[in-house]
View 1 (tube, one colour):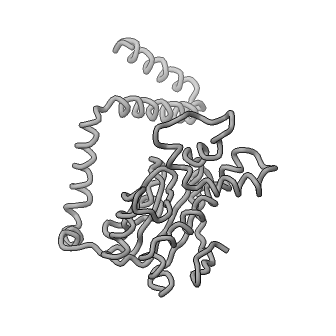
View 2 (cartoon, one colour):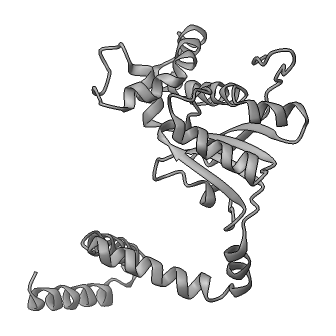
View 3 (cartoon, rainbow, N blue to C red):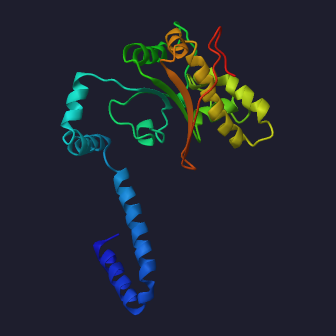
Length: 258
């Protein structure tokens, strides 16, 4: 749009509001909406490198430089109380959801917030990410957070169905970690819609991960001695709710979900 047509539009709008002042509120709402859309359009064109730079500059100015004592302490050591397993989904950052401050939570994120069972030959990255905060940092609580509209769980529920979204090199093998959650959901919720089944499976998969946590000897030992608590949670960003629960683990003589 040229400058002339832009100015002409503003002139016509002014003339209209002069004649019909009762349209003021309507015009204000429309202008606000248009402004928001233009800002969004402008931000979408920001170079990714510039976005990273501006993001860090904002953090440094409004956070780092205003909290010198905090960053001085963190430079020496960390002693988080929580170990959190969360989904890599861009909509569910646990630090934002639970207002965790720096140094408060050791966070591991992956597809569908899954914890595989103990196995030294597979998923050693998860084993290492679990072992360090538990055995070295001595966290007091492990939290596994599922969430609404989880693509990983939707993919899990669709496996072997005509509705399977795609075949992948890594994802399908990974989400099979919680295949038992899918099977239980299909059995217990067979009369529900697919979307409702997925919601149920999001929570059931968390329970499977909680059970898998106890297959790690260093986790199980601390849970038995009441030195470590493990909990499940589900964040629904559609409804704005957060459910938190504990399971009654039978930790002796063998672990099991009750």
